Image (cartoon, rainbow, N blue to C red; front, side, top):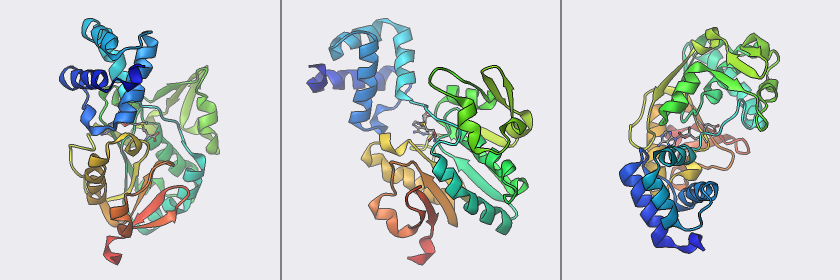
Length: 273
Ligand SMILES: C[S@@+](CC[C@H](N)C(=O)[O-])C[C@H]1O[C@@H](n2cnc3c(N)ncnc32)[C@H](O)[C@@H]1O
């Protein structure tokens, strides 16, 4: 079975390191293996070396592999319960601070930061005029899609359903057939830029950071550096949201207080140490 061919797997990984615009070292092997074998299945090959030959000969496979490795799967209001649990946090933040800075890292195609801003517009007790939202990602293509703000209902993605947490989605999104485009007045309120969470270091004075559905793929060696970036970017008393299957590393638990353990919303409380 190709899956037990560790050396063959490592040859593919080394090739990615040298030839593909992606840093395999950041990610855990189980994740890399799942993405590579998914491409092998698509190419109908069972051996890593056979796949490596295709990768070397066919530039379009390099692109497909890059797409597969940067899994930018996302939704509007992904994990609806988390967004419901976030409402009181946003109400409190925007009533207590004149300016509230939120960062969605990574933001993939922008649906997460747009969800945040649309929720603020839609919930009367959240003062959206005090909120600024930044979305960042390592993928230029994802950022391009995020800036365009157009999403399509397909066989597997129902955008109308994703937006149903809002009272009045059509106030924020133009709908034409299967195509949903975030209105320019919403798009203008969300900035996007490229940022690598492993390499690019912290930002400053954020009140709320989402870091959802990336940490599960990151190699354990890089998790603490990513968390250092997140905590250095947060104000004391700010909030961090991680993905539903992710947790704050043991070493840093004392710096966080769970607001909703189930929804993975934490308050950053380093001063309480
Ligand atoms: C599964 S999406 C998560 C999107 C969103 N946070 C969510 O939960 O729906 C993961 C994203 O992480 C991005 N990514 C991968 N490695 C990264 C890194 N080192 N720094 C920043 N973004 C990264 C990918 O490009 C992809 O868009």
